[in-house]
Length: 212
Image (tube, rainbow, N blue to C red; front, side, top):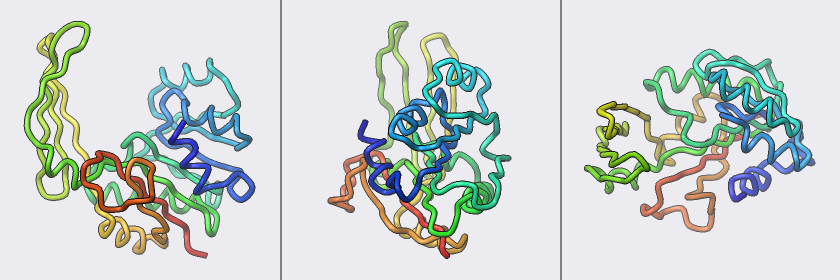
């Protein structure tokens, strides 16, 4: 799994054995990391997802908690990961507060890995598109306003959903991290750090390190 290889490369087991997977869903990454030898705590607010993760087993332990409220113990983890664009859903102040709480859960020189949406990609991929599901066509509308991405989904059943994220460039994240006692140590596109300027890929990863 490319995501787990990426995590392991920036948080190698020998130096970062205790890890939290925040917004872990049903524990896909948590189980894979546990199999590699990490001691993993999964954090998830969806009770059904937590129940399924526990049923699947595989090594991690799980905590039921909302990202907006979760406060890890001080220096509890060597590394914290937030995958699948699960960070950034709130306003700027709330996002900053969330990141600050996660940072306090890291021991000195611990690392925080974020998998987010890439602002340059979505700035050039706005508008409508249709994609087909088993029960019909879903219309997706994407727009970027300032540093925020808005996604509207209209389903064939007539149901609709709206999603929103704060987008972070390398410069934005570096400044935010610095204000919270973190240092940006890597910025990558689609889990590939060989080229930092590709706008054609939708995912961007930041690796932050807690200052000593």
